Image (cartoon, rainbow, N blue to C red):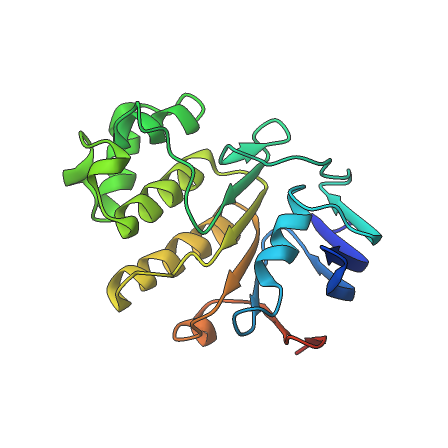
Length: 215
């Protein structure tokens, strides 16, 4: 059976400069994989290429058995809501409140169930604020709430723990575990700070500025 996320011999050049070379990985549904590495190693470019932001110069990518296409994915869910994406700067609509943003993404979930998700992530008190009125960490947790409510088949996250204290970073871990182990989601996340890494992923791959290594 084909993996939910499959990257085969992927190479990417940006501005004529090689960023990623001959990378292969696969993530099955019900599995959590972290991509680690220092700044500049290509973690964001890897996830951006998988989600169609960047175009590879070589190799193959498959999301749920089909190529991702090319173009920025400006929603938490695409491919019919079967893939959820969270960028380093979460995509939220500033014309809507935090609660309304999450309801928009949740594909028909009740307001009560969405409020419970916000409560679990300790941001229910910000429900009536618009994104520009809250901190970056609250926006990040709100975007994660939208993905959690959506419960897609694949989740791709770029630095989901960034800017969060240890308590909220552990809450992120809890959400990823629930998605993978209770909702059978394939989870792929780029992580710079590995404080919580031993407690969560089923697999870890490490990028360096020069190459790609698999643990």
